[in-house]
Length: 272
Ligand SMILES: Nc1ncnc2c1ncn2[C@@H]1O[C@H](COP(=O)(O)OP(=O)(O)O)[C@@H](O)[C@H]1O
Ligand SMILES: [Mg+2]
Picture (spheres, rainbow, N blue to C red):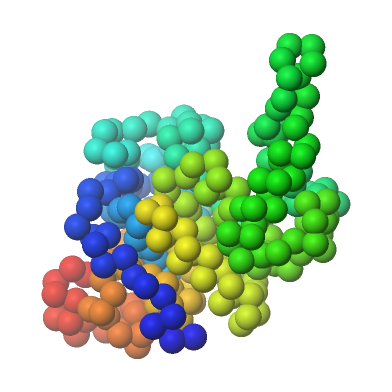
């Protein structure tokens, strides 16, 4: 896949962040998973969070999505300090997360998984019931928008490919009004073709003005869609670079542990 496949959100960095995380620390007993990480995401951009296994990526986005409370640091949502007590609080504010282990029920239909308790209803009072036809129609439409033509809304989620399942979760978040979409390693278990489909989906989401946080440990996947790149290493950020400021080799080196930090400081304009 070439860089020209995607349009990048050139204007994204000029806008105010939707979510801004300032000096976030997270300790689990003696373990310091995050030692002061700052990161923000703006409308219509894809901000990649890179780092090796154990770097703190999942802990960081769990803090952003209300699963963990930070030990220290501040979270601003649309410029206002926020405390998310539960993932539901974050979700209601418009922060949607697609976790690594997708919470889906393989034997259930795509439509049931799409709504998961948020089905549209028809009728009132005693006559209120799920509007199955409407739910089916919405599911088919939203999936088609993401480039997936289901055989039918009854198709079991278990019959979809890994990439298509990611797309169900992404389409669901978009349909329910996400302002920020956090994707934790959506491409790590996928083959080349499916990876390219998921990256194309990320691009569609970004083009709707949603801010995407894309977690990966694959530099190539990140470079294919990212507008900005932040590298985590053992709970610390090694800096944020903007597309065009950093080469694939430099990004790879940063991920490898920042041995070439001194050299890079120059080429990143001191943002490391
Ligand atoms: N609930 C937890 N309790 C204790 N340690 C944790 C917990 N969650 C993560 N950690 C530790 O925090 C560090 C970062 O983990 P994680 O955020 O999962 O990294 P990544 O997603 O980058 O692979 C690891 O050392 C991990 O063992
Ligand atoms: Mg992880």
